[in-house]
Image 1 (cartoon, rainbow, N blue to C red):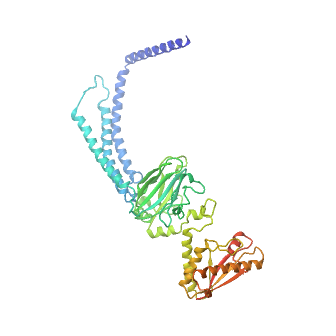
Image 2: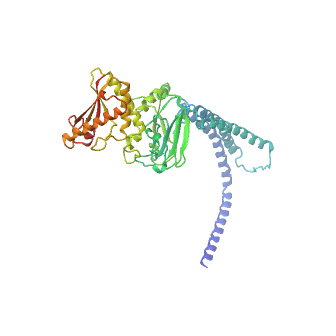
Length: 498
């Protein structure tokens, strides 16, 4: 019953409101508001007509004013090989859409004036006009066909993947809130495999599989450095939310999607230094980069290519800026040679290292190069008595039994002694100060003898070598620290005669 009463009350209120509206309409006519309506409508239509040229001129002038800083014209030309195609497509699109923009707005404001409400005027309704429909269907269709076809050509030119015969550098960019991790291949020029299940934010941000040898020399720099004229393939991944890998000066833009790796390929065509010289020619770049330091570097001198995130990925989105430096091939090779492998710096011989306690192939190769250089220097040393420390000769604890991994270094020493077949050497054994002094001397002599005997088995004449145990008498480090004692436990070769 209560619901019925409420419904009747609502219906009654609706009837009352309708009646009030009718009364207001009759009253307005009596007061002459109809005439006032037409007058106001005329004024509005006239002001719209006046606003039209002001609006359109303002759009054109502002576009011309900001074209260098916001539309990619002027000094900020594309720095990539494919960028010219994208800029050309943008220009054609802007040309046609600009024409449509002007025509539609002229029609909008003119029709607002021409077809304003006037007393006695009635709208004309016509069902069909074939000519008009052909015009407004055919022209947009032709323009859209041109833009779509040109867009497909540019897309196919810009977006193909590299082929098996292509020469390129591949790097990986991993976006997260709020930064980018960058990974480069090492000397093997190949990125190692990754597994998202292995991601450890502190120790393994990319989830690298350390059992894959290709991961051993990969490194994670603090900036992106690339050689000019070299094709670059970027693997793009995300750790948490949607990000966007955006290199505005290279016309590179690709989403970084969690769980769905993407890629982009581009070729830089100008170095950072040359691009700065181009900017120097423009007056607006010949001002201080920081207004508070008028004597500081100018704007063109402080310019850097940059990597940004083009998604609104959170409140720290702005901090995802990374410097990108384009250099010559020689500068790139020099920079790359200075980088440290992430595995060797952070993983090697830790609990996360699957090869803990074992020599790696890269370590063996690098050590062989060191030994070759050391022997060459020793043989060229006019003073004589040059000493070469054997870094990868290991013994069982408290024993003179050689560990298996020692064979790699000793085999290389045997090879070099065969090359320098006139050299006479002394094999010296050394220990730390832990334990009895006489026992340490005996142990060091046994270890030196074990090394000499191994070299004899590898074909080195016994009379070219002597074994001497020095015990703890010639320390190189502090015997009070573990590191120092480790340094003192060593085996050395002394070239006593050439």
